[in-house]
Length: 299
Image (cartoon, rainbow, N blue to C red; front, top):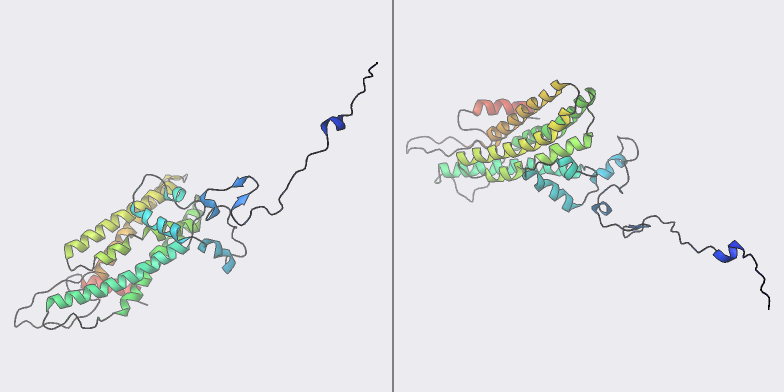
């Protein structure tokens, strides 16, 4: 029996081309794609979020900056209370900063200052003369303090970072965006909320300690995140801006102490007349400075 060699066709040896499945949906609703499931945080809040669209004066442009989870906002708030060597921008504001947290942090601080100041005033009046007042008496609110708080907090927490960003852009320093600048300043003022609540206690030394600790924590946070950006400038003189920021931050701390927590307990003798309480009015030598600051921020 003879055998004849026959050259096999290459297509017959390889066989038909195997079937390939291809998805035309991209990423499904469960956060998985063609490469497998994603376990990182970007599935909830990350680079997969759509970029801002539309003009910068339209609502659609700012919508992605308010689409943030509550857990992330809370984490970004209490992280400012823990001084670390790492940058807050790269650690907590990545991959995208938000405007929701800074806005509500500043707004909550405004109401915390107003309510705590009103309570501190009422406690000081009652402890000064318990017979003339009662704990059940209604609290008298000075809504002028509310307008002062709005002017100070929004000017420092919103207007100042925008002006700083514009100034750095003019000097050729573009290491961060205006949203990141507002986020750093907004979250950096979170420490003033518990400080305002603790200042309700009618003890002058405890109030100064609370204000001092809040000043140091928030000041260190701002310097640690702003100075590296200033240091990236070609001109070394740009770094001196940090001195101006420290002065403004100290002025903020002193203004909050003088305007909202300068109520002290007075001891009156049996023949000493008791002056009528004036909510929001200082009762010591700082009254002139308080009146001047209030006149600047009154609406």
